[in-house]
Image 1: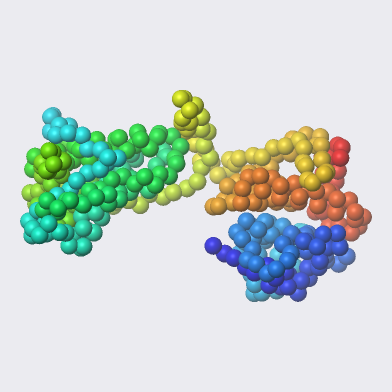
Image 2 (image 1 turned 60 degrees about the vertical axis):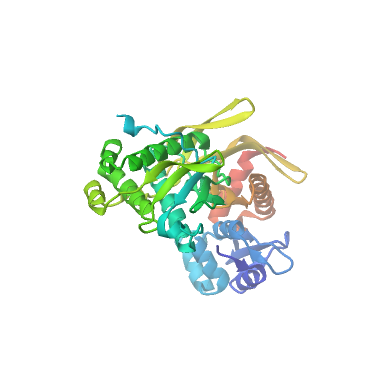
Length: 93
Length: 313
């Protein structure tokens, strides 16, 4: 079963263009060229493993497959490559 | 043909079966560990082979319900006792009792054939080579579990033990006549998930689930439909039913509406519904906080759809 650390995931997503939501501290939002693209809910508080169903939910919210999301959260997938994926899905327009 | 019926008494693995080992293995009224392991494993393999062949047409089957466990040991030669596990896995369709009854009967028939020594009779009860081969192989291994030491099934009688079935004289030449070298398709079943229509019947406080139909088409899915979304103190009444895909994935539940980009998950069904409602609430409010020129085309469409969908809050 895949698990990833919540704090590490939050920090990695923040380093790849995500930003904390003003309205909900449990959410990270992804903006591109002044437009709101998507958001994902990530549990806040002490560091813990994100379980399978949260990884599934976050993957979907980030418009990624589970493996792509794990790569985004664990580092191998860079912001530039993520933008390419979103662009292919016409999610940035 | 009389021999094809268990005429020496019923086998009931729910109650237990006593397997006596004589000869070299059992002569000190003990049983070497390797003999016990071999005996237990080969008997389990025989049960598994019977389950796979004789319950092949049963749509809901869990091999774990046919595991045997050591339940006793008696010093008369050497007699371990085995019983069907009480660690039951619930299945839909036939009851476990019905499935075990079929297996018990078939074990009795096979042991009866062993007792007669005429193993070629296995050709009569398993006419299809692909079915006969795994049974014959498993029975041969079981009969030779303790080398040349004879194995018998015994009953407790008047404080002692009485032989019921003798398992012996199964020669390799006979085995080779019975088996066919075929690809063991029965042992390598492929499993896929499908949705099913289940008829639930209550009788005398017992619930029976009977599988009426399975839907194997991968484009078929379960649906979660609602015309009201409730999150905390906010209620969203919808103009029509919002139909979402509902899934059970491994050990969690998922409710999703791909077009709206709303996904809820949880370890239980209520958790998944709560999660979906929270996501709906966030999307509706957040997209309406922002001007259209702050949203991508995708989110503008979702905002428009949500605003059309919600008739009152």
